[in-house]
Image (cartoon, rainbow, N blue to C red; front, side, top):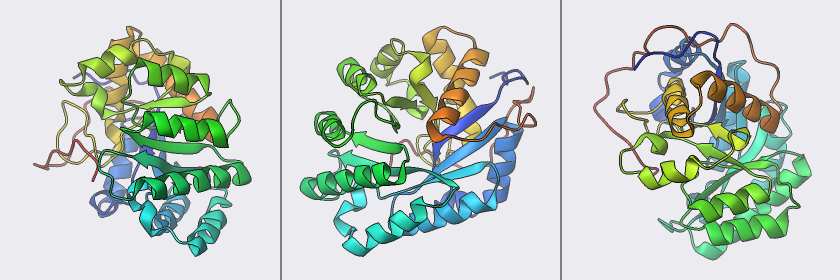
Length: 288
C-alpha cells in the first residue's frame, strides 16, 4: 500500500500505550508513529492502575495525552477510594478525557448492574472535571445511550470508541452530540455491514483510532500500534469516497477539538515511504 502524501497529519485518538506489549518497546513504537506522521496519541486507561501508568506516559512524551478511567470489564473491582484517585489524576493538565468507560454485554466480565453504576459515576466525574468521555460499548447500545442521555445534557462531549453499531445506533449517538471512533475493524473483510454504516456518517463527526495493541488493521498483522492508524484513515477515505488528505485533515481537527489538544507540530508529516512493522506472528482482532 502506498504511503499517504507528506502533507498529512493524523491523530490516533485511542491507544493503550501502557499495555505491556507496547510499553516494553515504547521508544520504537513512538518513533514509528512520528515517522508515519502521527502528530498525537491519546492513550487510554482501562483500570485504576492503568490510569496511573497513563498519567506517567502523558508526561513522558510531548505528543502523548491521556484518559483515565476503568473499563467495564473491571467495573466489579471499583471501590469508593478509587474515585478519589481518578479525580486527582483527571486534574492533571495532560489528562484530556475520562475513560474508557461504558458497558460490555458481550463478555459480561462484570455484572451488568455494576457496569451501569460505574459508567454513571464516570459520567459524573467527567462533568465535574470538565472533560470529554471515551465510551466503550459492545452489544449494549440501548442501555449505553440511555445512560448517556439521562446523565449528561446534549450535546455530549465525548466519543463512542470503536463504533460497530447499526445505523440507528449511529444516528442516536450523533443526535446526542457524540463523535464516533473508527478503528481497525473497518478494514476486516467480514465487516461489510460496518462499512455500509460508516459510509453514511458525516466526516466532521468521526475520529480515527487504533485501539492498539488490539484490532490490527489489514494488511498488517501482529500487535497493533499507533503508526497503523494511517491504514484506518486510508480505508475510511475509500469507504467515504473522499481523498485521504481530507480524512486526515478533518479527523485530526475533530480529535484536536474534542480533546482540546494544542496545535500540532508541523514536523509530524506522513512520509512518502512504507511503515515497517516489527516481526510478530500474533494477530489480535479482539479485546481481552
